[in-house]
Amino acid sequence: MSIKTIIIAGITLLSIYGSYSFRKADNIESLNSNGIRFFKGTLEEALIEAKKQDKLLFIDVYASWCIPCKQLKETTFKDEKVGSYFNANFINVTVDAETKEGKKFVEKYAVFGYPTLLIIDARGNLIARNVGIQSANRLISFGKENLQ
Image: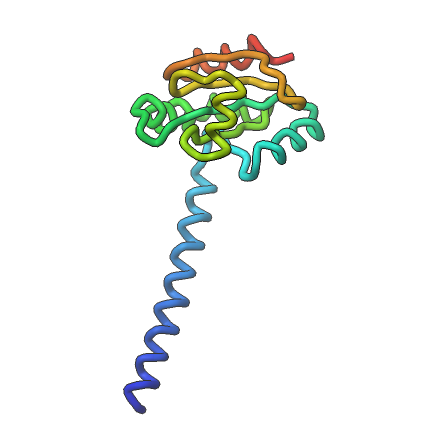
């Protein structure tokens, strides 16, 4: 066998192993996630989905540098009771306030602090706002108070 053949075989094996590892990690993460499941897609797509399912949107507006935002994601959003309630009753969305789209969103909904948690209807009308980190029970109460 030539050196070239050995190198190509090695690269091929590493590629196969690497793709298997990433796929396996994704499956484990999704199986162990009992918290809030956030919509993957644009805000416009989330609004369409909310209309289809006749649900409100729960929106977490965050910034990457925000410590309370990180705490909220690592604790309250991972809580099983919170996930069960919000996944059943809302289309859940995250908005990064530092992106181009996020900056437009922040301006439209007058977001001045992080994290800001919003509930909006499928037409984009603001129903409720809550600013700051929330315990699991407080977040569920916020959702229940504003569910139409």
